[in-house]
Length: 60
Image (cartoon, rainbow, N blue to C red; front, side):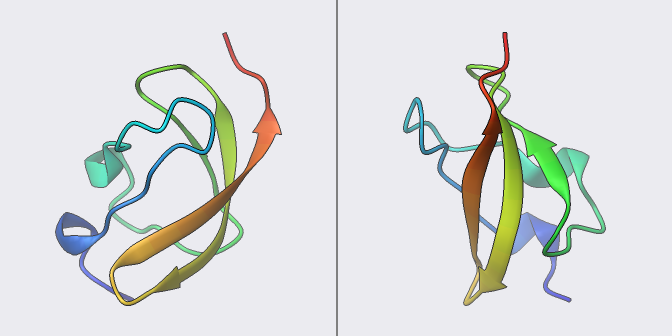
């Protein structure tokens, strides 16, 4: 597992960087939320410090 402080993710909806510090044990298969637009996202893959996500729910 990679250090969450070194991980980055970009919301596929609003294109902002997601704050992953709220998820210290981030793993593929987890559901996270974009702190900018509220979109619910599924973590598909974590590779080379980049978190790949897909939209699960349209959020707020």
